[in-house]
Image (cartoon, rainbow, N blue to C red; front, side, top):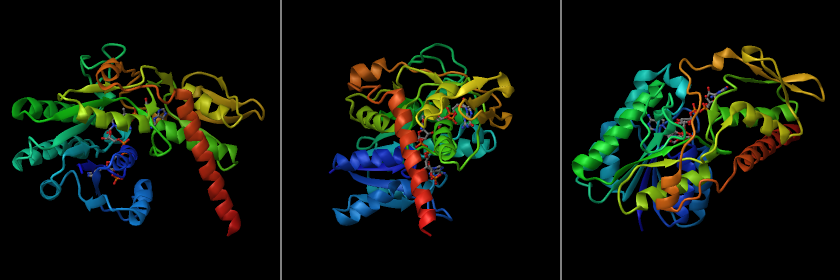
Length: 354
Ligand code: NDP
Ligand code: GDR
């Protein structure tokens, strides 16, 4: 039985990857941070299932800033595969916590690579590094591929740039199977609520249920290449199974504006939003009621924005036989809105039963 270690196991991707690897018969070890409140909501179903069936899922306390903890865990587990998903992953927040972001997202990656090397596991352990389309930042070429030059636009992007290069450097210097998946935005019903897609779908569900008046957004013109997280974690695994260690762009090859995402999300609850005005004055109106349901709030603007990102997944399609559009943009929005409407309904019925 293969053993995998996942950092950031309780995040969006870590939780889907755990589902995927357990299904494949792996023994899965995950690292979580100690928190003053419960932080295992996304992996709760695995505890419950694993209590019932054979126990292949193990959780360990740790932190990407704690070198001795990382070395001890890797030495005890001796994983065949490490998926380094832990990160301070919010681009806007990285401007508020640049040093911490560099420590976790940049040096944290080095800590994993060094631990594997110090422990003499270079030949046994394959390492996946969660790289990002934010490396491209100020876009030099459209669509972006593995050879497109990087130009990060945030402390997050710069920290991840270090993570990318140190992974490549360890591969070339120590002959390690250490690789980067350069993943474009991927979303799901498990996405954190401070990212724009989930912020929109949760607000749409609440507005449709009369629990919120309006949605406040930043840059409506920002364009992203949005895929479904469940499809993308399969690709992380495929990258580690490839016979040679190589970096891959993982994307759908299509992009949409934040405005388009919101328009489609509202449509699913029967609101055919009408956009009026421009720039900070732009508003989304529900034509049936005349009410403003979306407003622009400059508080959500970025100090240096990444205006557009669209990846070219040709290499992953060809070498990994991966289907980038298994879930379409329209399906993704529908999955998220349907999930969040059900969530709000459940909350409502729980309250009415009290
Ligand atoms: P999430 O923000 O959902 O998850 C991040 C995970 O990292 C959480 O489990 C978080 O734990 C953990 N973490 C944060 N800081 C530390 C720390 N100091 N020590 C240990 N664990 C820590 O991100 P996603 O699942 O969406 O993304 C996974 C990875 O992929 C990240 O590295 C992200 O930067 C990268 N990425 C994501 C993309 C996307 O569109 N989703 C696209 C490209 C790259 P806690 O719950 O305690 O905060
Ligand atoms: P991003 O995702 O920065 O691409 O990083 P996010 O959803 O935060 O922003 C996408 C775009 O939407 C614009 N935007 C808003 N964003 C947020 N969060 N909130 C708003 O109200 C809002 N209004 C408009 C943003 O300005 C931006 O242009 C994500 C993270 O998962 C990273 O970890 C990952 O590396 C990249 O995707 C690829």
